[in-house]
Length: 263
Image 1: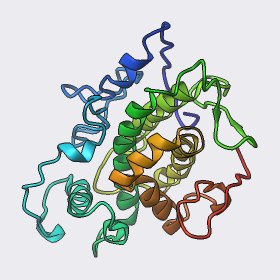
Image 2: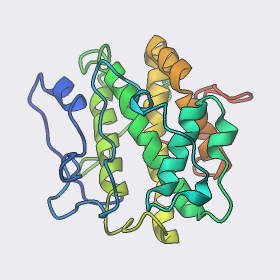
Image 3: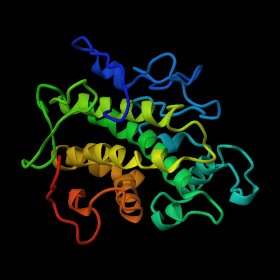
Image 4: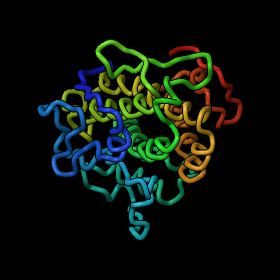
């Protein structure tokens, strides 16, 4: 991504499915695929952005639904905010107001950061489904409506990418940034200058939703009916003013249009 250096690995033909189905972060050392060996995540980063296997395309399905709910004020881990968000999603993924309702005495920067991490993790499930029909030969460019062609910021100079490559590069770049010790060394407090970088991640990540909606509608609808992820993401970026409403082109919330004003 443009916000920080990313080592890009170009794949040989035929390897894209393997990459999408691989784990972005090694569960042994929490290192990001394509990330420089010296740029590991913070010690308390946990297992971040692991792609789910093809037979289970919703990361939240793998969470133990038998875990008892725990009040946020009783969570004493450095991962308390992540734990709380996932707890609310498990309780009812359709209750977006509840999921986005920040507990008292919580840091708003951390709250935004943890939600974006969670969105990226769950979006891997959509990426797995998209690879079934979103091929470089058919989706040669990252587009939503005919108005815009999105350039991939993972390259030294932004350029066009097949949509499935753009999706993978975007999630990989988000993992590199959100796991960066330079910008996000802590899960407890985050500098305002680092929080300011979340908007660009949101804008690029949203394009995955928009491409799926306009070009792979059946896959989008099936995924959205299970996860309510695009609806939650739209409510999130609107609530915290992380994206212009003009760029929210998926008409999933009442009153939204279908035009995007900037690439």
